[in-house]
Length: 69
Ligand SMILES: [Zn+2]
Image (cartoon, rainbow, N blue to C red):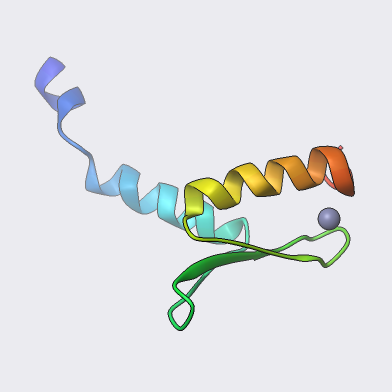
């Protein structure tokens, strides 16, 4: 059991990637940036990594267009 928890599960990784895509994250190979179009106000957000993009997205929806709330 403990060993299983330590090994990254390929299926879990696949699901999380699929979930990220479902949220509208797009990787731009030309600029090397991740972008996201806000579903509420159609604003384009971009960031150098998906992690940062998530922070920007959360800040945007909470403080700027209140999309998810
Ligand atoms: Zn928005």
